[in-house]
Length: 434
Image 1 (cartoon, helix red, strand yellow):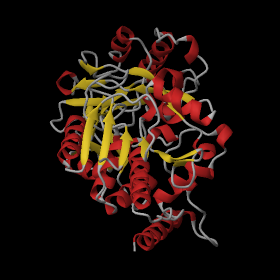
Image 2 (cartoon, rainbow, N blue to C red):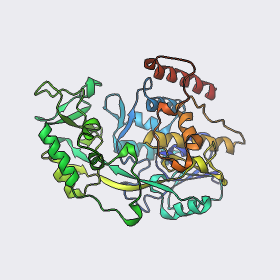
Image 3 (cartoon, one colour):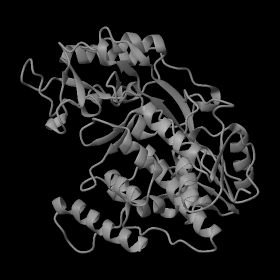
Image 4 (cartoon, rainbow, N blue to C red):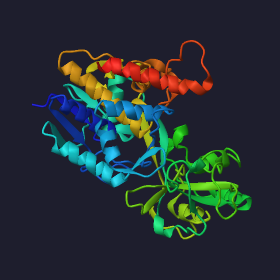
């Protein structure tokens, strides 16, 4: 007999299932893909990565998401374990071979004796203990069931996918390998330089390019600032891109020895190094326009695309209003939510909330109570934001960041604060785990 039902086999659902199974509980993990696909996914693998292959910075000493990595590793995270196993070069970032990673997660889930993976679409909230981890592309029927239970309309935003290019089609007589400020081993990013005239022509093409048309019900849906389409950024001003994904600082064009006017960066997308994604170039341009406009980038004139960019609608609930401190639905305590549907943003954050949901559920099934991780930890800061740290009416997706942590007591030098917060977090996590 299954002791808990998890709906959704993305990063959060897979992590929650793993935590529960490792704690000795039998899990039914329902995954819709394999029966019904989504607008964004291309395989039926667990934890398929859609928007990027990067888990962002792995620097646990100076970066909040790097600290979150470290905390998840300390708690036996399946997702971080597979990410480390399938890591590809990306400087100080943790990037993975996209296919190898999701295949690894799928194999681990499928082989666990306490997890039954079932390919099925779930249309209603389960009656027994359950975790809903259906992510930003929750099936309409289940989303309607959530709305009927909570009496709240789901919030929504658009998420855009960056194009991926075959490495052999990049002109390396124009482009060059270099990480910004020479971090990493020097071959983590490919850089395509632009002169002022080339940049202005490219900017104009982005504005003029034919865009995906919205359905009537999508027109008032806001974008998430952390995954903004490139052409939407271009609409904000002629120099917006030069201070965003196309900033040239710290990159010396070997042909001139100087910083270009603007730079387009590509990051390795698979272990073989044959596929590279355009960093920060999420787009809603139509496919033919993408090919035309992106081939205006110096070095990409003959680019061959393994995947073009896309656009899909994401949904999330008003978690600060609807969930308690252990991610349970206040109106129906047998149900927990995890992952992006709670309003966290990012692969790592989604998996982290899945990890916590699994651990909270395991404690409850054991007849115990698990205290929330301290607010001084990355896990606790993220959880606190989701379950009460934000205003429910204006709640928007959020990546983990030091601004979510409690301020340090007393006075300290700005240069020392991150290191002090990291030290405090490690001490707090050790006490929570003891």
